[in-house]
Amino acid sequence: MVTNNQEIVDSLNNLIQINNDRIQGYLTASQETDEGDLKSVFSEMMTASQECRRELVQEVSKLGGTAIEGTTVSGKIFRIWMDVKAALTSKDRKAILNSCEFGEDAAVNTYQKEIDGDALKGTEQLNMVKNQYSKIKSGHDKIKQLRDAANNAA
Image 1 (cartoon, rainbow, N blue to C red):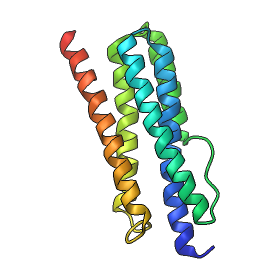
Image 2 (cartoon, rainbow, N blue to C red):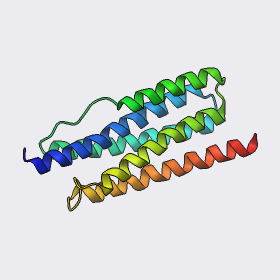
Image 3 (spheres, rainbow, N blue to C red):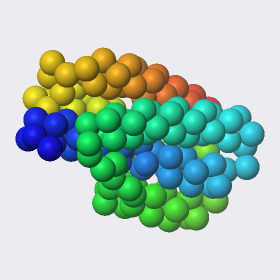
């Protein structure tokens, strides 16, 4: 595989990892709440990341690379932090949404970094990544809105 393809694969694998983090994070968040509206939103977020992940894995394979499995170290730390915080706050809506927004910030930042980086410049994958960024950003904004509403209700 030529270096350029390897750089693209590495970039796409970073996005696969952040989507893996997001999927696991929302699975955890869904288990930490009994609120139907949150479970529904968390399910939407998981589905969006599963779709993004599927597209990214296809591109990595098309480029002759191997899609990464698992999550980032920071994602594991995020899930552990969410587990501890949820346990301490008795499934508190604000705490769960704050944790989710922390994860959403990481996802948005990772996408932005890959879009702004050199690896995807001028590639056919860049448009796909930008479209995924729009979905991820929309999810981020939805979580932020729910979190702000929960904070204002307190």
